[in-house]
Image (cartoon, rainbow, N blue to C red; front, side, top):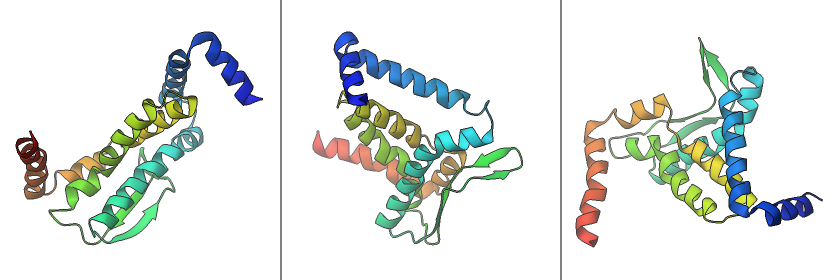
Length: 165
């Protein structure tokens, strides 16, 4: 039934228009979720939080950073919410930047792949990956904690550019 309705809607107005409407509706709901109470905000952001924290976990495993805990159980600190966390016990100058910025490193290419799919599912996944890729304040602090690591990871794309172009 849903597939028939969505196929009819797409044939009437076009795939890109339906995708734009989906993205606008999801963005408005995301922005207003805080205004409708903590429970709604946490539930609406749970899929993005899960993807975000999974990216940290995957990169921590790939860089041998020793992940010790993974949580998507939200908890409140004074007037702020922590929606999820990944803790590692072997973060060093080499792994701090990729682990901290893992959601952007993983989710941005994935979002582009979903967006170029031009389907309703692709647009919803695009939205989830884009909202998952945004680094938190704690992510940015962790990424800039090691100046040596930050310089190293900023030099990698520059060196790659000169080697391959």
